[in-house]
Image (cartoon, rainbow, N blue to C red; front, side, top):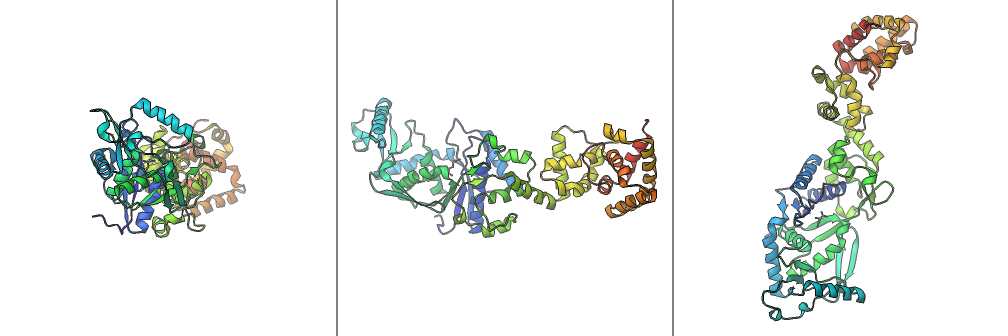
Length: 469
Ligand code: GLU
């Protein structure tokens, strides 16, 4: 027997497409609510639609959840594998009178559909009240729910409140198709029941299904779970999220350089929040999250907020991890990387990451550190390398060589040099920067020197000074 006192939630994606951020947020809220209540969070792959479900999409969903760090408790349940159990439930409904065999031939059904439309009522089959023994021997049939004809079907939604449906407006849902295949709403109910799901938290595009599913629960004599339907995520302009708003799939957010913990934190803020807290830990989210606090209005995707949150998580992330991520970006861009520069990459990351909102930007900002000697100098830097500047850089190089290789000491050395020469840093700063970076974005001079390490930095200056003019 399932322990009904403990909360069980589930995320039930259909593998008919990739994992979108709306789905990822649904998964997150299910997980947070389960953790918050000390319950269980399950995953069910709804692959009943054999034509549109693919193994590749299943993998994308599993990978996306794993990347986001949203791990279910236990192995995923595959809905299609449970078809026999779904048919068993239908047999029970047939036996109890909660369902009936509908022998209506397709052309008659079409006529009834039109009549129903004209009369403004839902489709009903004549076989609802007929004796199945009157059907021709071996005639094909579907199995339909024998829905009550009057009264109200109430979905007491934890977010939407009390939503009342007139039961007569809910049709006699097909439960089994004529080939014996279970239909979607039936499968959802049987699976949620068998998995012991106590709280169904999902997108509000399923609110109407909640009414239909309630009737199936009632026909089976099962306890109806609590429902919580989440408002959709809209684009920044308030319109339904679509391709023109940019990334939608979780994988695209990864490719755009967002860290999983940042996206998780941001998703938690879409439709839910804890006061004005923008950045919070997973433990805080678990402690604070309650599904009843989800707001009714659709949430809007806000790229500036996401960038801000991502920047925070980049700032606090481990430099080695960030170096690996930056390297992945460089590799995907086909950038040639000098192997001997790799050990210095985490140090370069540490010095530039404050300025990065994404790991793509982090890659831009670390490119200078990964170039191999001698650097190809950009035209601007070459233009700056006049005889006078070369002489200055030569003298500066000797001063730098005797300085401790730390940012404040090197800053002082550069300032001291300019003073001693009676010139402003502007006289040689841009040239030095170009010599150190080859024209790629680089941080301030002292940080660039430290990011490169002493040998590399002095070597780059030597290379530039020894270049034939
Ligand atoms: N499989 C449905 C979907 O991907 C979700 C159904 C549910 O959560 O009940 O939209």
